[in-house]
Length: 169
Image (cartoon, rainbow, N blue to C red; front, top):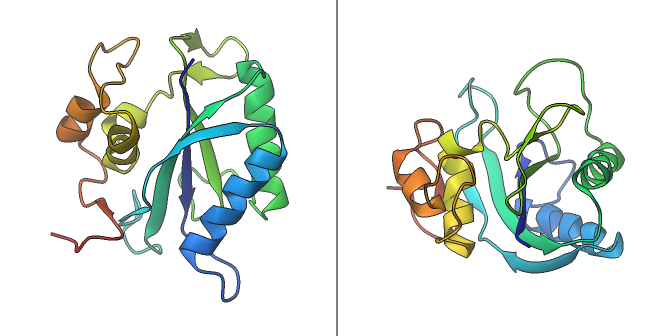
């Protein structure tokens, strides 16, 4: 089963680089029992919706887990909290760590337990679909029936996203 987790950060603490911070998150998730099969490159984009906030670093992980979707979300939230994530009620506020469950196989959940799958806004965000298309270009959104590559091309938010190891165009 393909389980995809999006990573995002635009607030780093101290001298830690985005790459180092991401590596630590991956190690932390592996230590918690997730099997990481694929990792996208790090991508960068302007903060959204407020481009005056620090730019974001994003990536997507393909993992295997025996956890159910709600258990996995709880693990992701615990990981964010331990990293210093503060949830102050502001939507899309700058954050030290953001881990989103993008897709859990073909599971569709409509919020009955507070979880919506696939992630309700991921398909419109280039900073999610670009990294996802990089590691799973043929992944098909279970509701939209479009591939990650096609969703990346049609994304309307974060269209400035680019892999950090390439020059921004």
